[in-house]
Image (tube, rainbow over all chains, first blue to last red; front, side):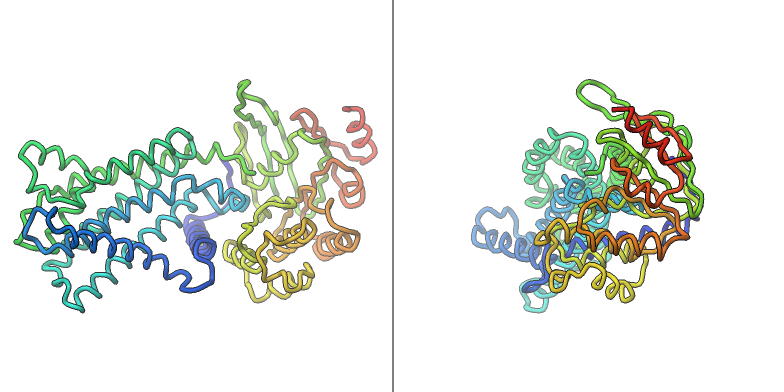
Length: 264
Length: 216
């Protein structure tokens, strides 16, 4: 509703500058300058994945396949962490940053984007570092098809971004949603594809499972990792379509929530 | 120039929509010093936030053809866990200003000493006000929006603010909102009174003040 004489390129430069500033600020407020500081960004999810992987190895009996268990846990758990943390960080993200909206160039969308970039970068660094360590120490074979694996990860990251925007905006618009969201993450956890492959499910459950967007991404990653050793089920067009729709809905909701933000 | 055309703002409350601003028309020329008098709750902070682009009007249109500061209020804009220096760095990044030029100025102006590198949550109200004011002076704007910030702090702080704002930057525009006429009388040349969401312009400060007083 405000008009001013700024070109698109100027706006882009400003937005990038703002997101950069928010990133630095977020890292500082969250991790401080003590001990390993911002390294926690990926050390934390890495330790998480390592812990869970160890648990899985210890309870090997529950694993229903002959596939090497470490990469199974790493691919599965890393992806869950990514979308869960991305959405979790966006939940109620506006209130603690309300005073920043005093600066006209800082928008609600920037707040979410900074957090999403940080979360996705952290999860990605964690996955890459952990894989490198495990491969270097012979705990894990290198992936068969890196590109497919990266493709699956990228699609999951896109999903995480859309989900983050939706959750971030909805928690701002409704307090009830925030509570429900906690329950939903818990329930989504077992059906997110981290613990099984679609192939292992009965026929009719397989079809249902493929409606879950995250499962498609994890299957793709695992096809990339294991190659022909697994029969993966997924649809890239479906996941892309869902991601597009979620991003669009997310942006619309963020736009709606920005008008409700009364500063301080 | 900044122009506000037919600005209206309504908030949703449990009793339904409440109109805070109605039909506000206002323009600010380069170099003009605009004083807006209004009682608590008259909508002056809302108005200055709309001018600053922090809030969006329900109806009407704002156009800005000069750079406008953020609304400089006394507590706003800090993250308590960050130091004064961190907050300055953030502002410089957001506005693309040179941090190395800003640091000495802010250190000197705020007289925070070692506290400049301590978390803002350890600051007193006066220290916060000094930091808030110095941060906005560290960035050059064509127009500064000031929401009562100078009401806090001692005489010395007051004199420094006056020097920075009204002497060193006398070519800039300033919009000052206050419930007290002293500042406005001393520094402004265009006067408005905001009452019950409507604005009235006066060319003379005494006329403005009389009108303001009558509104009880």
